[in-house]
Image (cartoon, rainbow, N blue to C red; front, side, top):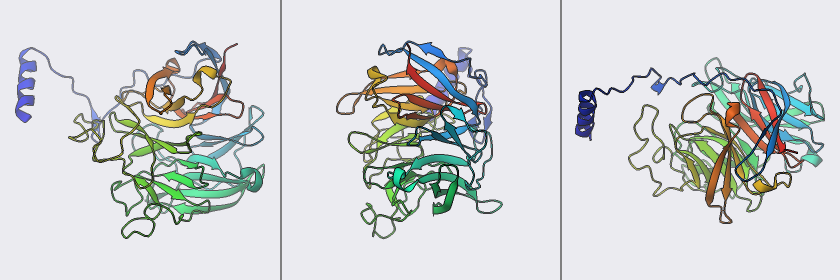
Length: 400
């Protein structure tokens, strides 16, 4: 292989062709900025889409900063997290200028989207019986000391105005990113990043399954096994940035970022290994393939993958009637495409009845926004968060 590369290099040089040298930082190519920094244009705007579903994009608010996750309360109000460590509420379409009181202190550092960034607040989820008990859950990075950070899962009570009875119910040994979602079984699923994703006796690079109080269900796949953490539900994940329960089957779906390519959507099955870092459809950031066997023999394969990477983020199943041409489709946020900032968008994927991919469509590409989260609202419309300093909550509705 080395001889072939040497000959190729010689031939290119002889032909007067030389590849450009790009700057690297921490062994990662420095991203070009030619498309970055576009502000959200004046809204609303309308679009024709591939399935004949003409849409209008409306700004619910443009007064949030790096929003991360969104959840709808029973009265239609929206709670959203900001990565700096703020919990905000939108009531009747109006953003309360004051953050919610009682939320835990978090650690936030670095510019969103750049290597080494630490997110303060991340995902938020409501208890399945929230209307009865008012319990909500939040993942965040907390400072352990001057050098160490840890991802914590907090449970709190929402009294309609503030958080009370705030308590960490599960704390990881290291910092990172995390998504959470309740399953049909009433259990809380929690993604983790970090070291040793192939080691079942660690918590990094896993999806965990917990009771609503943070304890371990006795029917977890590795419960009672020596040298296995009982919290682990699946392993071999890289950087999971979405968890969503399929509304029909009740299966938990997860998406995760590959390196340079190899982003995935996975259907989680108890005890299975999803391969990272042994197998991947992506390349390492300097250019070589992540592995010499990019296929997934011996590991659970993804049902969707992206090459080049779109930097997948939030994910939602559309079940509403307001956008009928999209019913049953899966929507995935994109933070950037092909390692180029300013190319974020919303991805729509159409499946057949066996959940095999038929086609996909890139939406809202001209907005050039990092899409951090996507959710279906109780009104049957889609809501997006733009991961920008001048961030926004956007609504997708049918054009009249």
